[in-house]
Every structure is written in structure tokens, then in C-alpha cells.
Length: 301
Image (cartoon, rainbow, N blue to C red):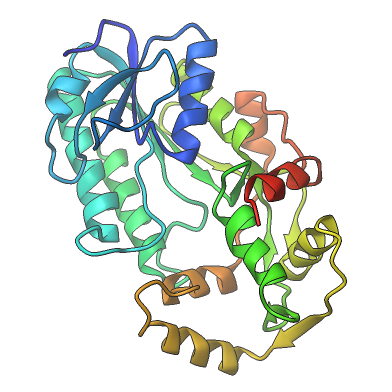
């Protein structure tokens, strides 16, 4: 079914960030179509469902017909089987851009990642940069967003990775010096930025880095999670050569606790000036400390 005129199409609508973006668009009075690969995927109530696959291109032409803007959110943090960074991030962006161009969609808002580029050595960041290049070549009013670590109930990093590092081992392991900088951003601020960008033509042709109000080191984040959970475990620094040994051994596991790509991104840090995006999209820049108890509680035991 083609979407009514003025509808915003959101790819990755059933994901962590996608559900928040859809909610913000609906609250702003927009009609929203959510693209998902599965017909049984749960969407925010009020969102019309369109079944399609950004990697194969199936269903994209119909989903883009009659929409006023596309918000492209599809992404993966780990490669699994045929779902590679190149296929999902690069081919996926190309397919959505082509379908949007064929339908005459005038506005395109794209989710990249803070740190996109070859600097960290990670295939994830390289693929995000390749996708950005495709967006910049598009003949439409585009905006690129580069979120930092995104926090909120249901996130994978604070409620997943960091919580497991703090709770599972007998001590809290700290990678190397633990001084790698991060500036995590609330999913509510990320959703506001995407939803507002679709209706702000002045932000077209620009790239915005979405970061939170405070910078932390990795060690500080681990301490914050530990103290929020009420634990007393000591933090122990693990030398980088030992960490690299573990990462290489983890590659033999079907579901490693950390991949080589994730480790490279960790060492690179993830921080930026929140000012330009905060001003452009009137963001609240919610502090992590106010939401961390809820995030950790939602993650369960």
C-alpha cells in the first residue's frame, strides 16, 4: 500500500531508535510509515507498516511512493552471516536513496555514526563513511546525523555491555588505561533531532554530531554503572596486549562478548561538541545519570 502524501517513511522503525523516532513524529502530528523486514514486527501504535528490505531493495519503491521525507535508520553493530556492514550500511543506503529518488522524495535524513571514517580502522566506521558519501551525492535535501553512544531503556551498551562487564566477573575489568573519552546521548534527544530535521529545511546539506552534555572516560562510565548497581567490586586495568589476545580468541566463538571492530571503536573513543546539533534542533541534552537506574533495571538480571 502506498503511503498518503505528507507521510514520513522511517526505515528500521521497529528498532531501539526507530521506535522513539516514530513516536516523536506522531506526537508532532506527522503521518508515519515504518519499514520493517518482517510482517510480524511490532511498531509504535499509529504507525502504518510497510514490509521491505533495504539490502535487497524489495518493497522500497512502494514504500517511498507519496512520502514527503525518508528517515533512514537501518544499521547493525555486528556482522552476522550475510548481514555485512557493506551490504546493510552501503548497499542499503544506496537502495533506499534510489527508491526515494525514483519516487521524487524531497527530504532525506540519514543516520550515520560518530567517528564515521577510516581513522579507527573498524569496518563499521568505514562502511558508515561510504554510506555518507552516497547520501552527499543524492539529488535531494539531505541531512546526516552522527550519534554518539545512545542510552535509554533497552539500549545494548549501557544495559548490555557495560552492565555485564560490571556484574559478571569477580572484578570490573578496565580496558588499558580506561581513559578513552565518550559523550553518550539520550535516545530522546536523538529522536527529537531526527524528527525535527525532517521539517527543518535549513538543516539540509549539513552533517550533525549528536552527543550528550558531559564527557566521560570509559573508567568513569564503569564506575557510574557499578555505583548505580550498589556493587563494591574493584576496578582492575587489563593491559592492551592481554585484551588483544582475548579479542583474537573470542573470534573463535559463535557469539563473542566483544568483536575486533567493537574493540577498535572502544579504543578510538566517541566524543564531539554537542553545541551545533543542540542549537539546531533545540535539544534538551538529557544527562546520563538521571536515566541510568531505569536503564539498568530494564536490562534485568
